[in-house]
Image: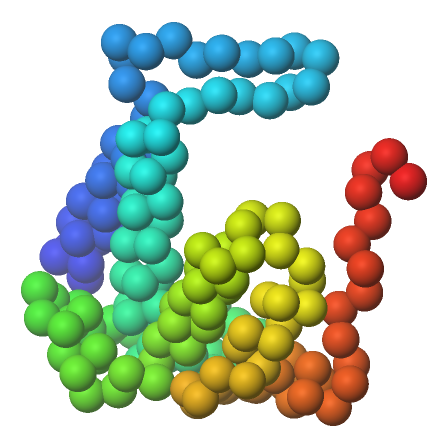
Length: 158
């Protein structure tokens, strides 16, 4: 358990460091709109950190998903983790990562249509993809394929 705590601590430190702004650049804050400007390099670093965190979280949680419903996993329950966990899970059970490869469909839409692409573009992207989905993601796909589509997104001005 101590090794697990050390591994989690290392990932936490990495994530914190990825989110920290470089000290040699000033953060610009516009108080009236609460917007913050960061460099493209800093944004890319934050995005990479988020992908790492999501991948580690999915991998770490996969063996116990749906096994401890409505309860906390107790401290005495050993959760296996070592330096091979990520690659082993990916090679043996790539379907574990539906939360991640579903996001890749959304990234494709952003790449092709821009960040302001209509909600239906995002919906169609994963609804028509040929990868397997599980539970909530599969339910969303089924809903879209059967006509239950996202509503128009309202802007704050309306």
